Image (cartoon, rainbow, N blue to C red; front, side, top):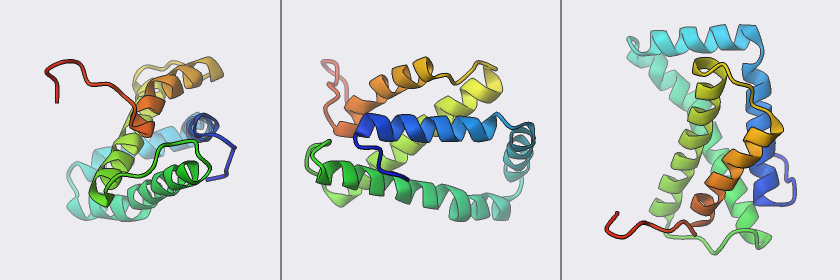
Length: 135
């Protein structure tokens, strides 16, 4: 993941790259087919985790570490919490983009990407506030 100078620019760049990939008809069809097949095929699901999901989780963790090093994010948490947070970031970005591109058939344009980033950054930075009484 290239260093774009700030957590917001990093997130926006990754989202736009992922959306560009999903804009290709062959990618959309392939992804939908693989996801459908992986629902029945445990070995395929594990290969997807190992070859696609795992490396993306590492990229998220590296991006967050880089942002912390340049002062764009607060100091790190314990390793388990940091790993869980990185997993959530990947899930939220991938889920939002896949839903928007495939299920919603809406464009992933720069304005939408900025809005998504604005919503995600407090959680990425660990500054999101929990409503009273929530966990």
